[in-house]
Length: 231
Ligand code: OAD
Image (cartoon, rainbow, N blue to C red; front, side, top):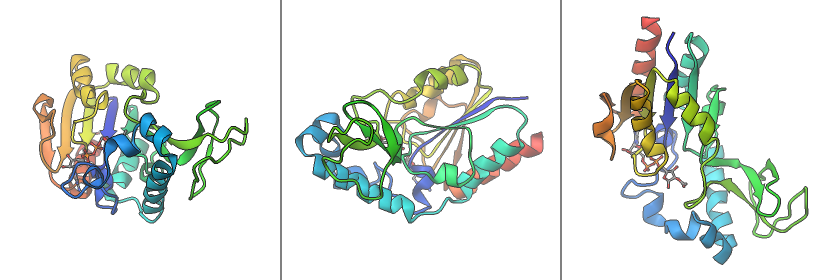
């Protein structure tokens, strides 16, 4: 019975129509990271940041999970060992695709966070700068997104799972952002077999035992079918 940890990035949602970050015409070619994905950017211009995530939320709401998201849910349901999906994505396509054991390490578009008291609540489709917290009334609502310079969520749980992993797969992530880009090394140290599933080799691609290159809707389905048929 093998334990499987899967890290996903923007590439798994690309074929659902959600823009990736580092493609030539991706989000980071259209917006400055410092302006929209840092606490300093939010302090300087909260409206710009809130509007950026309002757009992302609308794009995610209009998208549907693809066969790669669905294949991972199928794997979780049918595999006899543990399957944990750790996503860097802030869309909700994994949960809508049926995945249950899921960590949103970079936060989630459908959640709002109070900058004063850390209370969380379901984000409205359109947040506004200065929205008040339903718990403490501070006008400090922000998207519940982990920005650069902030600590990703549930790192203890993720490292425990990596330490117990027999198989580690990274799907659709460019390997540029840590700590996620370091998970392959951590899993390898723990003795896991490591597999990269991506359109092209990532920045940490040489650290994996194996690569499966191609669009996620095809490669992930193939990989899941292989694991399930091996029993
Ligand atoms: P990137 O945009 O950096 O990388 C997406 C990866 O997916 C690239 O390696 C693409 O080649 C690959 N890809 C694109 N389409 C694909 C497809 N159809 N099938 C398979 N692979 C495909 O996105 P991430 O690695 O997720 O963080 O970015 C990591 C973090 O950087 C994000 O969570 C975000 C960003 O800044 C924050 O905002 C905190």
